Image 1 (tube, rainbow, N blue to C red):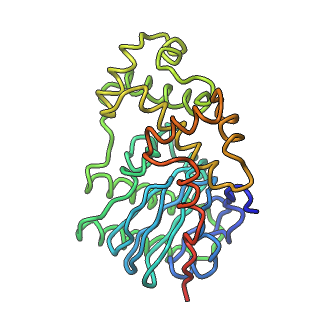
Image 2: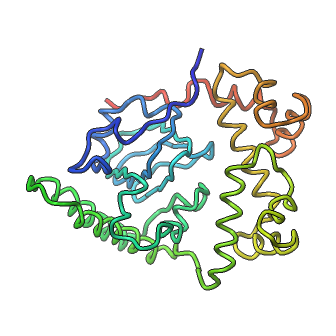
Length: 297
């Protein structure tokens, strides 16, 4: 039987000068960690820039092609897997959520970049040639600093990491518009409430009450800032959790329905099929057989 999706902490990997960060050339990393090709989660931030290689990867069950010039960003908790057709190369950086805190006055600074939104379609970018070269130079500078064995702090690396985010965001128009800080704060609080309560609270009006605003205001806010409805955001989170649970073969569909507070199994199956187009069992079969089995040699 398959256990739940493995969750890896940054302590599971060899550190780069500091326990809170790992930086490596991708091929070396992938060879060391072949088990990461199958579905897994990280408890840390994770990004990879590919300079070589083809194949595909999944981020929260959305598939993307792997190709040179592509960079992806992931936030803690997301589910990820790779399946390479040709040997990949590039750069990888893992860092803890508090790694940058010593330099940042705003604890939510990373939320200002759309590629850290937690929405897969915004997290995968194909960089222009100009931005690719800028990114490569920064990656190389970070790796070069690893050769310095002087026991100093990582502020140079932190600064380079922030520069990488800013250069990519500026080059790819991936900086969120924070012109209305009140609305962005409301949206952030709404997302936080969804993350905590999605299994119990399914209606926008329930969240609007917690935010002390009207349901119409909440819906307009989501439409203006995200182009989707408040109800769709709640529903997407429920479906995502259902997918994460379905690839644990130890759980019956009826048990998953119970974990997500559906009245019964049949209602859960109808809900899932309505929005995904397939039954939970079909999704499970498609996502737990022979995925991510190709190894790097």
